[in-house]
Amino acid sequence: MTGGRTGWILRSALLLCLTPPLHAQAPYVPDVTEAREKEWRKLVAASQAAYASGKPADGIDPARKGLTLADDLFGPDDPRTLISANDLALHLESTGHYREAEGLYRRVFDSYLRTRGEDDPNSQLALENLVDFYVARNRPDAAGPLADYALRSFRRTTGAGSARSQRMERIVAAMPKPAPAVPPPSPPEAVRQEDDVEKMPPPAMESTDENRP
Picture 1 (cartoon, rainbow, N blue to C red):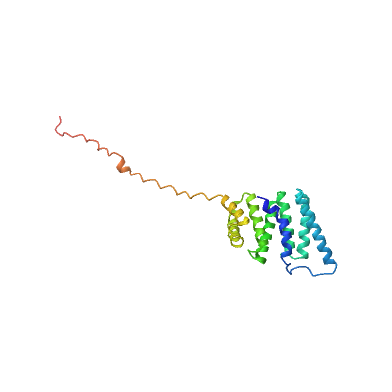
Picture 2 (spheres, rainbow, N blue to C red; picture 1 turned 30 degrees about the vertical axis):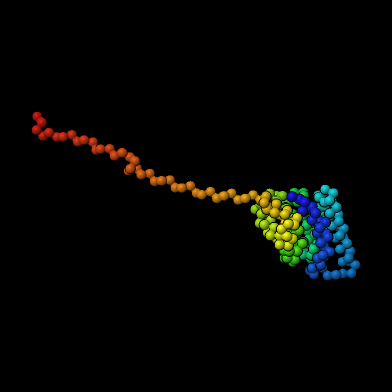
């Protein structure tokens, strides 16, 4: 299920204007700060263009440079930094670098959850991305609890009939159910040998005739 993650770049870019930056960034330096932010935007555009054209490997380098620059320029929890982190995760996942991609998806979700709360649109988008990642990797142990949590959150904030809630409902319904517990076998009955073995009579004793000639 990649539809949610494919649309994430465009949706998160639109949400950028709705979320004011956090104040954990490098000190403002006239001209220098503007030039660095302009460079960041160029790197983001290059990485997203590579992804959109079906060449995720070409987007890894600009995405990684963009994240490094954003971490220093904006701070680790700024929405612009998290856009770069998610961009890099998309490229890494598409090229088979799953462990690093998972860590980045986790970072984006945890950061938004911590700084914006679970009802924030960015938090919910990041949660969908993380669920989709685990479903695509066939990891119901990780996807199941997150999907249950997402469904409760989406129903509360968008309603049970929303497209987001219904999509997550289908994901939850498709999760494999745990196998029923098998009771342990009953212990074998004790063998009662004394009752089962026929008692044999003792051998007859020969009589002794003392008067025998």
